[in-house]
Amino acid sequence: MSFLMHRSIAPSPFFERFARASRKLLDRARSVACLAVGAASFGVASPACQNAAEAQPQAAPPTPVNVVRLGQKLINDEDEYLGSLTSRRSITLYSQVSGYIRQIAAKPGDKVREGSLLIAIDPGQQAATLRSLAASLETRKATRDFAVHNDESSKNLAASGLLSDLEYQQRHSLRATAEADVKMAEAQLQAQADLLRYYRITAPGDGVMGDVPVKIGDYVTPQTRLTSVEQDNLVEAYVYIPIHRAASLQPETRIALLGDDGRTICEEKPSFVSPQVNVDTQTILVKTICPNDGRLRSAQVLKARMIWARKPGLTVPTSVVTRQAGQYFVFVVETGEGGALVAKQKPITVGAIQGNEFVVTGGLTPGVEIVGSSIQKIHDGSAVARLPQAGAGTPSAEPQAPRL
Image (tube, rainbow, N blue to C red; front, side, top):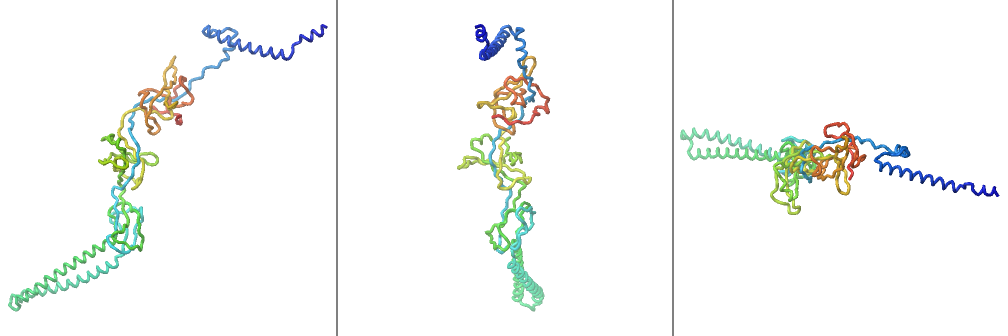
């Protein structure tokens, strides 16, 4: 009987598992009670709770960041359009005579000097005519010389009475006719020589030879286009601006032509503003003349930046600006308790992007300091530490892509 009773009061495995779970729940309740007592007693914890307090994690150290002090600088009020270029002096050459192309002395794209030969037209027939006129001139000169000698000898004969006045007048008239024939022959010879000069197409000035649509052996007429010479030391840019921006044109307005890399090739003032509006596009033509160092070509289309005015303002790097729900923010560095630096998230309004910076239109003032690096590692109220600056006002950390 006693053996049976001893077996009935032995602890079972189920009871042991239940006891362990109860102890765990009791320990958790004791920890919560210690935290509540410590908070009620303003941080004075009981000895039973000291071990739990020592197990709490320590505060994170300040995050080292670059600090940028904002200062005013000149900001462009600008817009970008497309501009087309044309040569300031582009001369198209046509044939002034008819004939066959005999020689093409230069290739398209060659630099040519004023007076240098470009194209030669076969002058065979005109050269023969010139030789014939030259021979005719010599004959008329001989006839003139004889008439002059006969007229001079007739003066003495007429004075001595051996020659009548009528015969003398006839000989004098022959001399005048012969002299007139010589002058006419000289004029014809000179005209033919001038015409023969048109068979040599020469460069009217220094420049670059354009396309040559003809080839050796082609028959050309005065209506045939031979080539062109581009004087590309100056180019003229045509920029069409919207009519509502015409009022923004000021004496200080400038036009900058940009290359494929975004760098400015030249920047000049407008040289012409059209008084008329394009009916189809409702735009106004604005021209400017730029010196060309060889990077610009006639008929080229490139970006043209209209710089309406320059005024002082603030900019911030795009890499330090965050965007949440359509609102832009930066982290402003402020001094907290005990002189510690704290990053505070501040909303700002921004305008256009110029280069790698936002133009600030509101929310910041000159002289304020902002966090310039490690944006992903901090949040509003984070403790930060100032890193040594690599340059005045320039963050030394590697650039980071803006979070939009």
